[in-house]
Length: 214
Image (cartoon, helix red, strand yellow):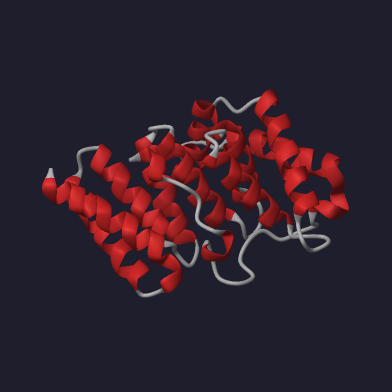
């Protein structure tokens, strides 16, 4: 079931205008991007149990094996995404999200975790970053942290049915069938209201069906 976990399209991750603010990568260049990514890793390492979502981010960073090699790859991916952006000066939050989505799809999870951690610690980027990190955590089978991050993403922003799908999948993996059914049913109900969430409705309904058959 983990292979069904992908990042949603960025336009679906939040309302128009949502996401990190600040200078775009076009202005700061590769050196500025590297500092952002490295700073995100350093900041993640400082989280403690006083902030459950922050502690979950730190755990996912550690489990993913994010280090210098992944940092170099994440920087290369972000710079490549920037160069491919159709508009000059594309917002750096969009660059980070799209580069992370590519990395998740190709199972380069350490790279994706760095990109998403940079988004999560940025002003306005927390909800999106946590959603992406929840997907990565579930793919890494770190289910408790994935569930924490998914629910924190839901509570910190407008909410996305993918977050509830991740929480439901994790609850199921943890043997909490009642919570899993509640999360998945809510995800399906929310997703059915908007055509752009069709994939989320399909995922939630499929997992609910699997639960009923099992």
